[in-house]
Length: 507
Image (tube, rainbow, N blue to C red; front, side, top):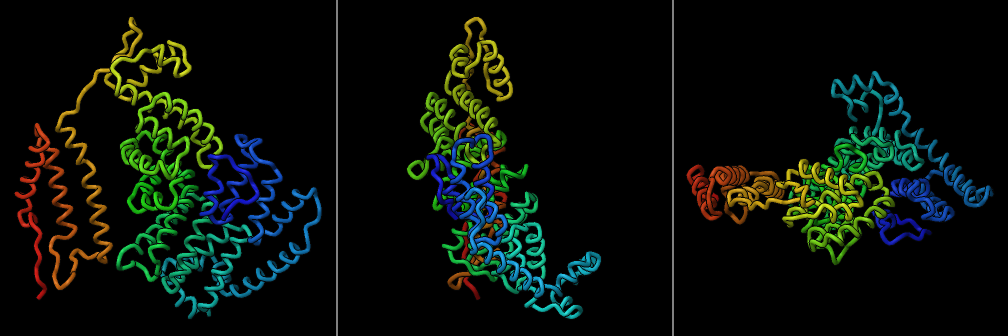
């Protein structure tokens, strides 16, 4: 869904994001352009009203469209086409209500519904026997829920779609999947972030379940459709990840997983703006900076904006002057972004800290006056700021007040620490490979191919790798090769039968 009729700035991603959003989800973005203080004077009011009217054209929010039309045309009466459309909407709404009446009578009795749920009888078989509710009535409920969403009643739409998915129970997997997408959109527009987070997890489970050779549901998606579904989920999830308190951390985990990172690099590299911003803001997730830097570096020819350029300047080129200049442009970009406007101050502060931490780790002597001028601070404030930063960042440094310098004590990590750093993510990555292997082969521990049975399986792989990691951590070796050799010996001693691959012919 595009946003027509508006001239946008170079770093404005709204037209790009809108292509992957339902038109109802584009409304918050347009309203942000219209009413947020940081966007004042950026767009012509008439252009924004035209964009809203274009968005409403293919919805059933006719009364809202009429109001926008009057604002756009100085109070003129709306055209006859809008009045006719309104009449059709009322007729369809009345028809669908009548078709769903048997089910509405049951749903209107909260005590009855709770009783049926408690006794595990809230299903089509029981409702059909006792109340004459047919499959056609249930399908009409889906149409009614979709209609309610289209007229802007998102609360009712979410409730009806939830009931539809419960009662359908796998009979119509395609519609159930669409209902899940509709429920996610309704939860987003209602601001129900906990429910939206659950919907994202459910959609992701369905999509990822289609990636194996044995899909986990009757829904059939080809590889191109899986790529499209993941692309949409990435964009829709931005609302949730920036709205839910735990969203940023979950966003990092999801976007840096292999499947979704491949999707970002293939279909939507502009999402790197949001991933980069979240990593910079969240100090506790700086451990994945290496992965982020690698991706940003790989996608420099596909996508760049001030936020990704900041990472490029600081971590790829080590251009501290460039990073400082880019940070000023980052602030302007963040202020004009719907999702990032709330983290402007956090981003700027953490970016400054990141610049200083990186600078400290590659310089032994830093002049405080120079630092104060770079940070637009007086000398005393800069010295206090450095003291707090050294303490909080746990940098091995001291301040020489006489020479007005920060002295860094350089330390080289031991080989043992280097080996530990290299292997600390081994278990996580191996579990990911094992899960992918199991999913590909239908969840079975053993894989049968070509008349032979593979002996090994995920449990053995996980146990072997875990033992190797423990061995490396406990080795205390003086060289990397010695540590690796001891780890391998420890693994073979504990798991002698797993030390070689075995093929057993099928009988």
